[in-house]
Figure (tube, rainbow, N blue to C red):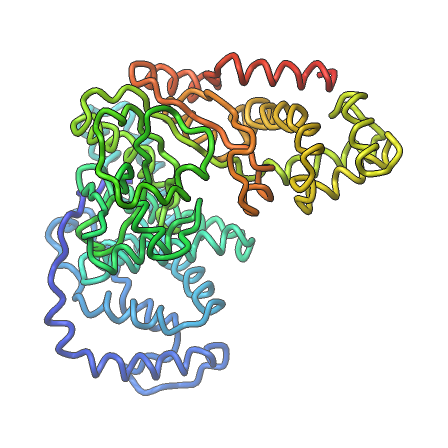
Length: 505
């Protein structure tokens, strides 16, 4: 596929909007008629009667190789018409439209096969001829719908429309709504285009403060996916003294933060989230630079589902580190304070598996006796069932004795989950995978770090610090990405060793 030029500006769609009222009326009729697409009737010339009709109208044929740079672009009204039509559809209709678009307006496979054969025939010819045939072959691999996507990106609101359209594609794929390779190819093509349009050079780093527009603050609150914002006082604290909030924005999506990073400025690396998000005392304080030695990244949230897989979060952290180093030259420590989503669910699955197999190795004999005594059960599978129930309900957190008994067991289980559970050789936990790819070190597990109901339900209240040693991030990232080696501290390795010893792994 031939690389496309990065699109950095939007062309005005004023001329299209002069006919807005006519288009809206026509599109309403199209949407109504769409539901009878399977029983199409003969229509007057020029009347749009189905999704096939509108796609034929707006997806123009791919120019020939010779005229590829001379052909005029399709009228902007085509893009606007498609956008209005798509938005008027129901969920299942959108899925059907995307299936038709990807299948009927993709690559000309017959033409590709002919050119591939021709390329084989030219291997003994001169280099110039071979390169020209290769270039023709690359061009022939361009799907027809790629032109439509490019044209849509140039009209007002077009890039945001395509981001949302890809979110629909990802939902179709993840929900098994379609296993069509054409749908996956359409998703891949759109992801490639979005990666170009949202490249680092086109992103703007913006610091969010209490003086930022109200709309931006409201969106920052709504998009916070890690530690939900409770009220305006809460968001004021998160953008106030000893706190920083940064977001990437893009000229094509004004007023829309793409990925948001919350930072706490502290004297040392935090071991619990309560002191960060519930610290009321920071509201009226003036920052003392001498008390700022550490940046703790405690929340990073992607706001656009359609940008999944487009590298934004890791770039944001690196940009923020440079920004903070400029503001605080003496700052020496950079670390996350990260949740561990999925740990409790994994633990429940492990307990169920051991229940079926009649195994009791997850806790020591002494720990099982303690659990059995507290729950008034026998120190066998009855105690295991009781533990499963305690973990699923969070009831164990109400007993100081249980909290004390379960701490060593849950800490070593969590360490193994982060370090030992893999998918294709990489850590199973998505947050761990993100930071390790960035070159961070799995530095410290923290007990009782998130005591909120959500924290207890997701990870038994445990959180982890991924520390960024700036001189080592490049080598750490390479070791993880290429050799699947996790850089880890003695604390975590010690817990992993305890788990292996107790579980006879």
